[in-house]
Image (cartoon, rainbow, N blue to C red; front, top):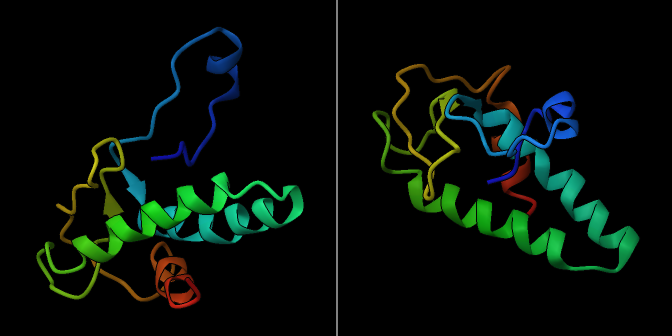
Length: 105
């Protein structure tokens, strides 16, 4: 999973970068726009491939949470597949991007 909040100071110090264990599902969802556009601009499909694998993970996990059909507001992106353990759900802020952009894939 990608690092959704890039701690650049840690990167400069040479520390390993990895996805967080508490990530907003909207952060994961909104990456689809950025990664798709990056592939379009560069002609390099690796970025689109990466976001497609993330969406495949989301699709497979949609029925695994406490409320089937929805993803919790917070997911554990440090695991593959992501862990859907949260008990807060929303169609609004902190979740909306994943629902808005998933249909465009």
